[in-house]
Image 1 (cartoon, rainbow, N blue to C red):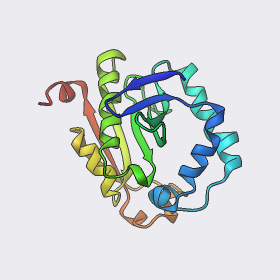
Image 2 (cartoon, rainbow, N blue to C red):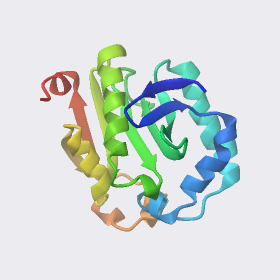
Image 3 (cartoon, rainbow, N blue to C red):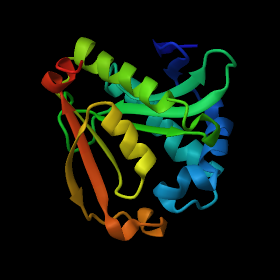
Image 4 (spheres, rainbow, N blue to C red):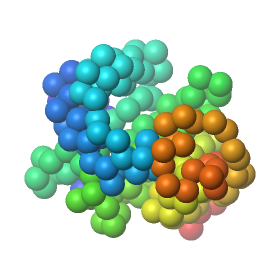
Amino acid sequence: MHVFLETERLILRRFTESDADALFDLYDDAAVMKYIDGGRPADRTEIVTLDLPAFLGYYERFPGYGFWAAIEKSTGDFLGWFHFRPRPSDPPDEPELGYRLHRAAWGKGYGTEGSVALLAKGFDDLGVKRVTAFTMTVNQRSRRVMEKLGMTLIRTYFDKFPEHDLAPGAEHGEVEYAITREQWGSRS
């Protein structure tokens, strides 16, 4: 297992091709995908041919960045994933933070715990200047994690995301949060 980070309760490791079933189970949960695509059934072929190859490609193109399988240390259970990677339109030192966790992991602080570890790694080891995070305006759980991290609401915007149009609350748009290295360093 190629471990990237460990926290008190989590192991964040690289994905492998053998993670297709775990991803399918995560993506096939309508509640998990509610604010992504309206909770439509997952497509295993899409996971195997598009998602996993994209995840695996980040490790080589952007050392230190990518998608990380979140494993609960005490049980070995797959809880979901975190990503910490530059978007195509952003410089490498301004990555995006994201997460997608199973319902069983909600409300237990895993989203915050994994995100704190990634932010610390980025700011302390990877020379990151600024980190962004995005979600639908109505996704209060995700927004709460961003706020706990000390991220600031930057804007609400209305881009066309065809998959999001199926999600409840799409008419309220998306939000962008961000935190700089200086803001991270000044957290108490």
